[in-house]
Image (cartoon, rainbow, N blue to C red; front, side, top):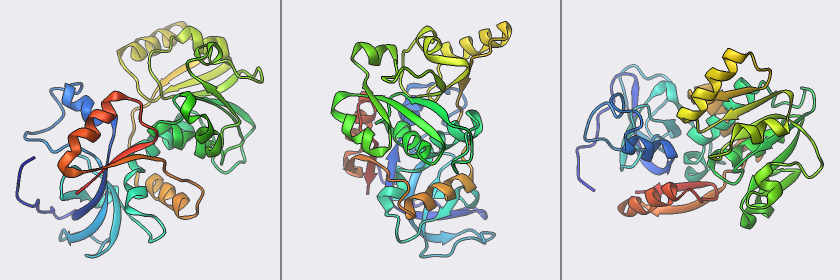
Length: 305
């Protein structure tokens, strides 16, 4: 923990007094060097991409925001674990009074990952107008999984979900029709209790072999891998070469302002409820960091100055 000057916003940026930030796995993966030599772009690096707070200064060309406005933002170059952060106008949205700073900060990367997985990669409609689909969400009590289950309620979906035994009631309350303890034989095999094959699997866990997915997919089923590693990319390449009808699709989240506005609106309307695991003071951000690395959080881990 160090004292640094308050950053100055460029012409298309806003300076935010941070109320709440949230931690995502990508934060500590960058620390482990997964994107070396590209990210972080420079050192010393303040981690974190998700913030909610108050605009205290605007760049000369900023049109959308005024000083004193409450916002939610995705920070392109990190900077969330601090008292002040700068955000690009194009990745910042207004936060209405019905949405708390904690709810706002819990949304960006995890919520956008779930939204992009369902709409862009799986091709589902979140207004209930599409055909009925059977969808499995793995690790449904985690950051991305909790949002995937809730957003699927807005689609015409039958939702099967996996999670730890302690979170079964929570995941059911989020809207899952069937919930499996991932440690039971059926949970390991991803078998739907009602015997359904899945049109789509939103995969938020780790270390599940393709053969397990394949046994549970319909003939043209898709698996969207929200945490793709090298093995996923090799499998994707192999499936393209063999012209397989079942697809494995890696997710690389690309934050879009209109999608974040959509998620904030859903929270405002009570149709989406961010699940918050824990809140830590910035002075003990390393405890939040360690909890995220541990991988057993229920919902989002937050940090507050």
